[in-house]
Image (tube, rainbow, N blue to C red):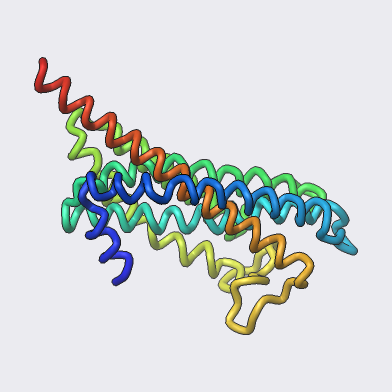
Length: 243
């Protein structure tokens, strides 16, 4: 409900730009601060694991990237729904701005997972449920970008991509609960649990600081990409009028 209200409030491009220019600087500054603090805590303060040694530090990039990849896809689907239902003028620009960011986060998650898996499991990749569903998420992002640009009619491409984004939302609970529904090498959830985190506080704090840094970085870059998308749309409209 709150998300829908926010989308309605910011659907007007002029209103969005006023909002974006007001918060972009503080958000970028906070992102820099959280990422710097998170890297210091993760690389210097956090203890080594008694089994994995320093390899465990990959977690401080891998886990926030995974969380944000899933959150970005939820935002992508929300923008797709906004485009299809309310035809908000900003929704198509927003979904085109989100997709490459989400794809990049998913790729970071998969690459760091492979780097972590090699010394831990003895292999770069296994076709278990969690890893496979994350790979499907990457394909959904790539498919969204391909569909959005597959048509000469921009609106038609945006609607097709929005439908894919909404249909693909079913993959998010599969990713989340895959370690509970199927046998998998991937460890079960240790932070987002109903009975509370099972990870030690010395690792939990750096992880949450890094996660906040990833979130703020995502928001800052997304605002910049939407601003660029609005500028490109205005130039396109102006060139058509002149031509």
